[in-house]
Image (cartoon, rainbow, N blue to C red; front, side):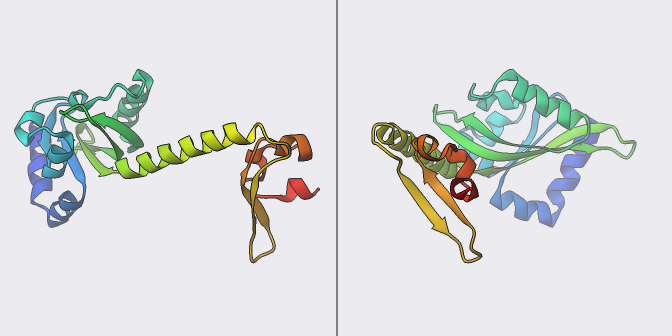
Length: 192
């Protein structure tokens, strides 16, 4: 615990940390996962005050979206001294959800013993909302195109002479014997 406090105090005083803290969500936990430090950005997005976050574990913002194996993988990775990077869905105090691109990094003392974890997160909620809208539109388009003869597609011919089908309905399989996924990056299978 004392080593974690030394790390925390040393880190907070660094100018680069101060700059990073202005642009990202940051927390530092001890080896039990108890939050020892939370920056203002983390407090704002979570809806909890810094005082409410300090002394809590991160499960205070657990959305329940990720399976236990997801978190087990995180703990295994950081306890091995490695950085864990994933997109995480969290739940704010008011019940709303938000997504963060997360990097959890262990910090070891001079003897190599892990004594704290630094978590740096970027808010990617808007990106995830756009992805969800795009997936919903694709699903609707797929349902619609299942009932038309032939297939619906978008074709790209690139400057280097290569081509692809960024979108092709499932009907492409009946005509060319390939799946939409097979021609999304490279259209050669259609022309063979």
